[in-house]
Amino acid sequence: MKQSLGLLEVSGLALAISCADVMAKAAAITLVGFEKTNGSGWMMIKITGDVASVQSAIITGASFAEQRQGLVAHKVIARPGEGILTPFSAAAPVTEVVTEADTAEEIPAGDLEASCNLCLDPACPRQKGEPRSLCLYSAKKGEM
Image (cartoon, rainbow, N blue to C red; front, top):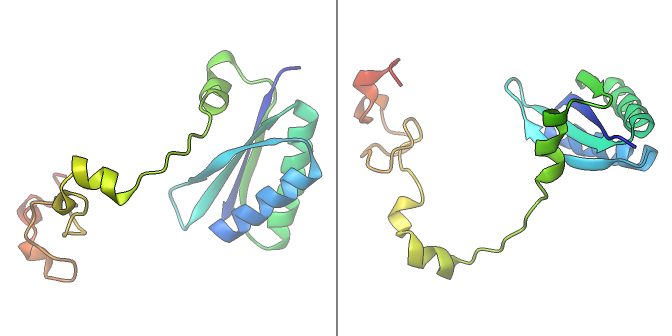
């Protein structure tokens, strides 16, 4: 049986998690992941499974989100083309535990965070909260 792809876009992370829970309980689907989309805190929920299960789960999730005034969009792609589903199904989530001792050996502590929240350049002398004119790239505004 060929897999299908379901996409549900909702407003907010809490609603996205609730919708994913409802969808997983409604049908036999695989939750691929969440993705933050551009605009007003919208979240995309990606699921895979057989066509009927994905359609059922998306309909259930969409109605759940609509009741809570958070539905943005939904789409089911039944039997997508060869290259569409491969990045979702082939990329299995890998969990790697990184301790502070591991990162301290490889990367100096000063390089881990940028002090300037505008340019995110670790070499920038501007600290968060200081005037924007102190940023290294303030003169190049619009060129970045």
